[in-house]
Image (cartoon, rainbow over all chains, first blue to last red; front, side):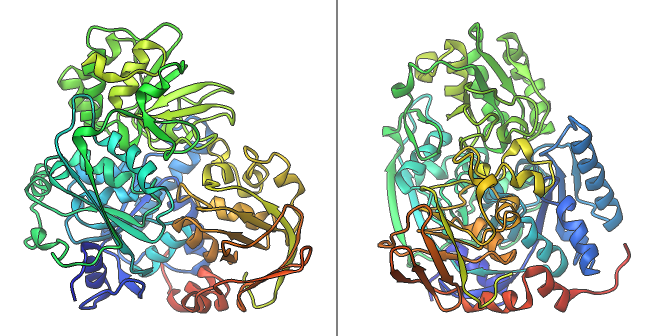
Length: 420
Length: 170
């Protein structure tokens, strides 16, 4: 039976030859990502209640990213408990304040094509850029995984999205994702989205991760990109040897898709998603009269090294507009180091940006950069739900780092193409 | 926990794409669930958390629970005593979280007519929703059988307790 990539991975993880769409299977988990947000603080009390331990400390990866650095006694207590959990259960893959989990997983070479991975955070779909299954689950289900090493699934159907053509200047993966939220809608629960086509093939792993990260905004089970030489290079760059069968993890040529979509990247223009949903997107030009109080470059999806470089490209020799503040929270310590070494951070700071610590922070109103009532923010993050970044009446517009930086310079939403 | 008894309650009606950030706001994310639940849906309806009665039924549009994996979104409804949630469709993680906490979720048919304050009777196992105010009955997909074993055990945690508890150091 011909299968899509996600079916093949699920079949392997369930110990079956094939996985039929709609079938309910129990999968063995290869990697479980726990974060400080829904990790030990929610799971440990349940382990005590159950009288159970962890199934395999080597398959658990633990990160602190949501509440770092501690801003009050509550977040400090959560972080302390997270560190104690790592020590108590012997979790060696514990990355404390090293960056946002989804990005650090990639930096550490912990994802391989064909893996079956789960994470206690909705943007765990990010990992699918490596040709693995990776999806987000709530802490109650992650408790089950931590105890048993297993999770049940209904095998999803796959939507195939192919992009062709070259981007125009100033158009990037984030614009694709915002456009797709509008085109495919956000109601694709229990379906997988597979990204391909020549445009995606030519994209680096950072850009591919934007697509799979925001598969979460499509409502999908996960997003995947079939592995290729670019995938293997990224794994090697992390100091890890790719699995011998890595390139075999592909959809069969005659696999059946729920739907197939083809889009022309050359015709795409910079996109902005207006409040309060990522699917409320359109050309950046349509929003040029919107004044912004805050511009934010941050989060797993929008503050990797190349994202900071995009912002710096726009901000080189320019200044943030009076009355507007630009906050930059690099998505990992490695990002911070690379951007410091190549002068990107200096460019941002000279332009007037405020540099924030690595972490999830303002994206989810958890750290520095929270919005006041009625404030407007343009943000390189992935969600703009009401109250997401602060007060209920604040308004968040989503865009690429190019567009966020251009808007910071203008003090109102701006099309970045005039700046490049 | 879900059991086979029908659920009676008053309908609280919300629109499409009600997201988890409004159910469990980030500003209260570090607070215990009792505190967070008081802010559940306040951005959409400031009266809801204070006025909802145990057994009341939340009715949503499409993609109810879109957004993050935060289980507090589902827990907040349970904390407030919500008896069931009905919607045209649910987001994946919210659906799984709610079921794991024993909160019944049922998908509404397109023609279902439910107004704010209508009295509803919901049978999650038999698969029916009665709008007793309007005198209308709708057939819905019952809770899937594979979830019933877990639900029969009383939810994911008791189910785990039965099967996987083993002596470990703490």
